[in-house]
Amino acid sequence: MATETRARNQRTDGEAILELDGLTKTFGAFAAIDDVSMTVERGEFRSVIGPNGAGKTTLFNLISGALPVTEGTVYFDGEEITDRSPPERVARGIGRSFQISNVFGGLSVRENIRLAAQADRRSEYNLLESFFKPTNRYEEINAETGRILERIDLTHVAEEEADALAYGDRRRLEIGVVLATDPDLVLFDEPTAGMSVEETRETIDLIEEVLVDQTLLLIEHDIELVMELSDRITVLNRGEILAEGTPEEIAENRDVQDAYLGGMTE
Ligand SMILES: Nc1ncnc2c1ncn2[C@@H]1O[C@H](COP(=O)(O)OP(=O)(O)OP(=O)(O)O)[C@@H](O)[C@H]1O
Image 1 (tube, rainbow, N blue to C red):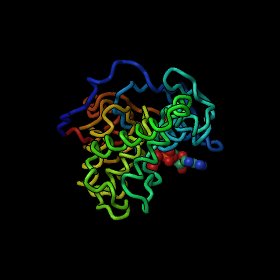
Image 2 (image 1 turned 90 degrees about the horizontal axis):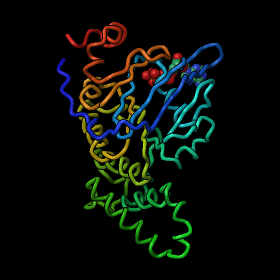
Image 3 (image 1 turned 30 degrees about the vertical axis):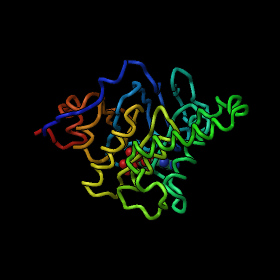
Image 4 (image 1 turned 180 degrees about the vertical axis):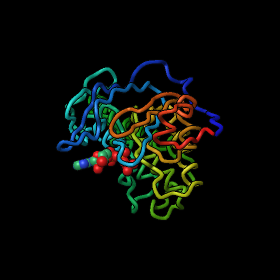
């Protein structure tokens, strides 16, 4: 297949934001993740693919802290976070999205964004300042809310209830809520599960467009889309890294073709 890419790797600067060193996760005698080491650069769009049961979700759970590692080390932004709790990881800038809807249906679009902006992890650093200048903080959040509404193109429905939104606008709001928490790295575990091909494409395009300053780690089953958008791809198989590289390298990799893609480059 043609692997025309519009990857954004020109934005990466070679600096690692996430490093996994010898990660292993066992359930009883079974290793769901088996000695996985990988590095993700700041600004990268990295996809993780692999057959069912390959260990993709488990890997994400180790990165977010939802599961403790059995062995190995996780570094984020130059610091070891292996034993940090999920909230501590969020505070450091690891965002996770979509598995549980992050939108409050009964609240307006604006209120949803404002709530997320208020919970912005960086706000704690401004605590002293906001104590002395509470009005500034309020105005700052309102301004930030307005900027995000424009960015996701929902200013015209800002006062509507989230539940009343059309399907596509609801997706926009969900991505806006992620953006409002100001993460450095966002983990997307099959954000398009259950969507049509067209909806999948629109959603991933939107993620790419709105979260252009974030590092993205994506589990996605639409291989064509993954090939088109990713800077690099990690292929997992039975808990191990089978291959890693640019979409072109992955498409040409014999092991990947044999194990997973079924000769898709033909
Ligand atoms: N809590 C658990 N206890 C026991 N086994 C588990 C647990 N979580 C995952 N596994 C097993 O680990 C393996 C990897 O599962 P995981 O969900 O990470 O794979 P995946 O690549 O995300 O698969 P899929 O594409 O089907 O979502 C599977 O064999 C699964 O049954």
